[in-house]
Length: 317
Length: 66
Image 1: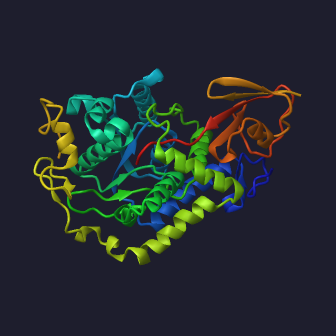
Image 2: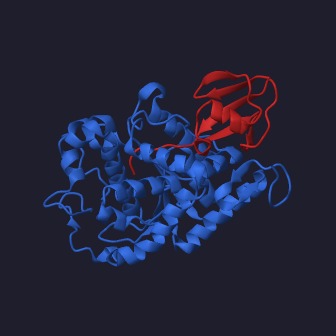
């Protein structure tokens, strides 16, 4: 198979785009598409200070690499979750992130969950009824809190995450199956700053997961290939598999599902476009981040139970 | 012919896999969820495989909750 642009040997075929590209044309295409996504969804201005959340995986390191190549002022933040497994998962992931940052002279902040909040993620998850069976949901909640706090205290203009189209389509599928209307209303490539939360953006939301993996491989970015030991059997992985089976039969299914939703979203949820108007949110009296709960937020409730000697004074919010 | 496929650190010998696509079928993986690499070079599904080739299938799907 030949590259559609130059005729050299193609290294990747993307049926949903009717495109096959060689190494260099793919790298150029990928960086160009990121620029187009940023412009299309107004994700950042050239002068913005960006904080990118990095995990050591292919997506987030690819995002950091592309933003750096595009000349953005971008710092990274890694959250050490305290997950071990057979490969000492969190420590190994951190090593990949640190190597990446050092090679490019980029600034990296590392937050150790256990040092800041008294316990690591598996132990925190084990304390809640929800997390005992679904540690991923507790992990997501804690990571969101830490990312929000870091973006606000560091005066960043944008908090970026490397969610790809497979991530977005799987969440969309899950929320549609559950008719989780508030979650559907909030799913977008760009979320405005509101109620003490930072402006958030997902520049990779139109890339298939194999496209971000291909970019990392072709750029020689070393990343952790091992999966988080807690992700096995996760609901999102199940939905990703279902969507990929459909994609194999009908190329473009995932893209259609997500992109058409974004177009329908403005019609389906016009009020959601004004997140700042949400009257159900108030600042948590302990950490200050918005919550719809009465009293302290669910994050503070969880962390208070660890009797961490440092929290909440250690929290940058 | 035979081709060696490395998937999740395990080696599998495939006797009849003339293309990457066929190798993925024999390994019962969804092509969308893996990248194939031979001698450090990324392959497309249509690339032909030769006797004695060693290819690595790299999983690309990850993630727990958002």
